[in-house]
Length: 408
Image 1 (tube, rainbow, N blue to C red):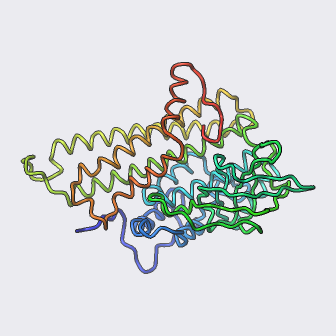
Image 2: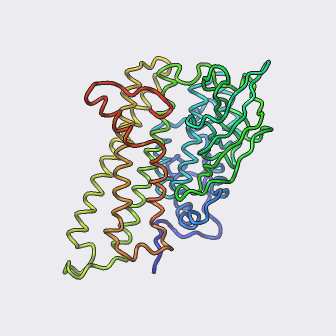
Image 3: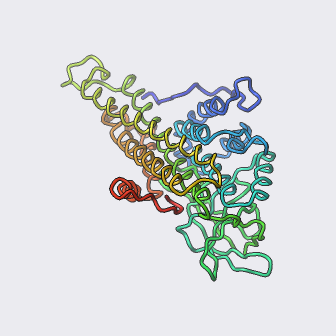
């Protein structure tokens, strides 16, 4: 049985990818990377573990500086462009899109929660050294406690779902203050004494996100490493952090849905056989299959429009900075929630029904077409979709904006 390939075959010497190429826009670089990543995505999904070579390719590409302002050594991209890159990578490999997108989320966390002196210095070092940032924040996991010492804090405990922590240079960590129970968020080097990262991620989807656990044992966190000025949710502008997270997820979902659609279309046109009762010469003429592809396309078009509208709203809110008002933040939260629900629902529909338009042969294990459903199913459990829909309902009926939290 022929396997599905959505990109050009690999050569012994990969095409160079990086910001010094003549056609070096972020999206063109991302497309070149996506072609390379797609060739091994199914095999790496089976293997799991850390995609070290692919992460190093992202380092070499210059895209790790994508969202950093040019004055601090970055590419100065808008959120719309950054999210388009996330979606492009997700079409090829949603695990790599995940760690790439969350890496820019960690930088946004530094910008939104930290002081200018903190984020400017960290942005410049990140650009210069091509750092990967990992996530050890997970506010739902409250096993990590911060104890105040004379001139520093001691973090001890464990965090789960720490995407991208392995093979990172910096981490965003979070602890509950032992006395006040306030959130303590800090940016620390991954190699700091007392930090250990377990290779214990073995879920059925997003298998190369390294989303395992991080243990902190009496980790020293200096006061200047705490992102406390202005700190979490201190203003509507600081409250953009969860909206960036949700919109990164949205574009990963959409990229997965687009990849599933493309794989299904390729198989339908090149491998699937018409059902005898259809009395047509090719599967592409089957009216029932055509109808389903029409439904898939309508869902994708709607989700794309909502995702792009939400990205435009985020860029507008980001440009407002500390002048951003609560109602403006609320409007962005609604557009992001709408886009996320649409992308998730459309993605689940396509990733499930794609086998109705490809047939039994498409379930062959070598193809691993089920990875699209597994990746999306794993990721959409990040926070329950029903509660996102309820937030939208609160606005639709009562004109109440979503309450800022780490998930809304």
